[in-house]
Length: 72
Image (cartoon, rainbow, N blue to C red):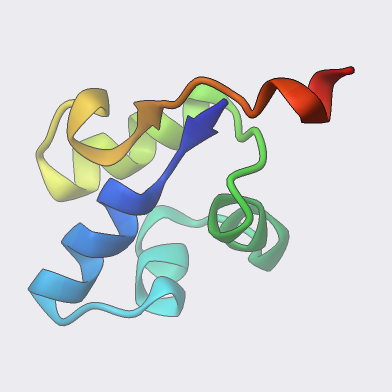
């Protein structure tokens, strides 16, 4: 599963709130909620975040092996 803890950590280190990011990239509140819950977002959104934060996708997200029990 994709996790966004790197993005949330980056925002924290920059002193930026999720709402400030939402406004800066023109995202909906639902998109930011999805990120907070490690739910899927579009590549278009990832592209906007990377452009705004001047970073690479690997700087803001990470793949974690899902807990095998959840998939049974």
